Image (cartoon, rainbow over all chains, first blue to last red; front, side, top):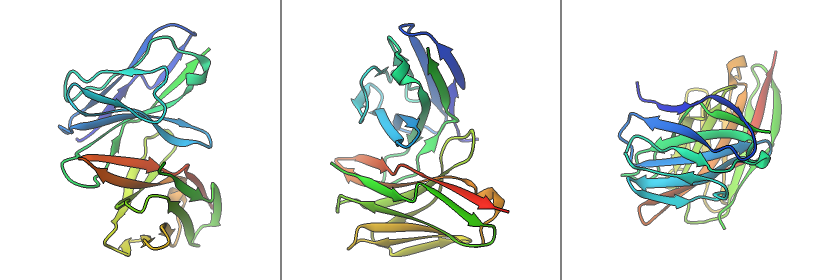
Length: 114
Length: 114
């Protein structure tokens, strides 16, 4: 089954404690991205990757890092989480070989930073 | 920069009635317009999309219309059912240098009333 898998689904952490949210896709997609979803603000892109070892900032990259060492994995790293990073996070992947293609989203990771 | 405005933010309709969600976009180069449905506790999922060379597309009870001149597109759901209750996101995509940048609207929470 084609899917994007994020882990963990829920995470409560303390300010400053480094954390990683993993994302894996099994569709051999080149393009992967991370979004955060906040009430009234919709989906905002944090980082994206067009291929292995190619990453770039989205609209709200501050406080986040990503890496793309393998095609299937795209982890999101918060080196020093702060309460304003409390949010619902989604990883997505798509096949960008052609114009305008469907993005497949993971189930989401609800992060709370206290 | 590119922007997608979505209205209304919340919509309640009686079961069996129709629902309409409207979006406008700012960049005339946008050429792909997907709609995503997000059910509670899940990631967004594509339900229908339309490309700039088409004015209307229909899939059973769901239809999307596009007015390129006005930079306006809409989602129409007819004969609404309880399972249509969800958050809906419109998006506009621009294909630039093999990079398909997607901008999402802020979402519409649709309630289907029994």
